[in-house]
Length: 121
Image (cartoon, rainbow, N blue to C red; front, side, top):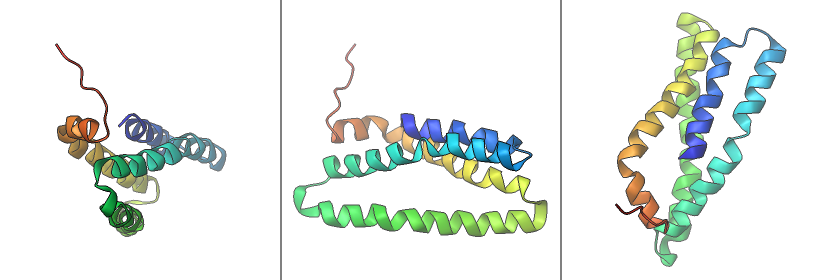
């Protein structure tokens, strides 16, 4: 969850990049969160599913990444056609905010599935 929030916050500078150097720096900062996020996603899946289903579960994760990229790219293309390139940076930010919102209700379930201790009162 930390890396997802970091990736989301790291995407905000993309909205204000008005030159190639500024865009490069913003993308570099954004990219710092991608590898840890993917590694944690794989680790969560491995911890949450039975041993006999790990291959299938990881296949679904791997298949979901290009699917999400294709959907967001298509939507970004529509946004670019109607509102310009700068507005297209709102598309991935919107998807990341949606990912955070849909993950929050299940955060304790994820923590339990991967063996994190739940804080007690």
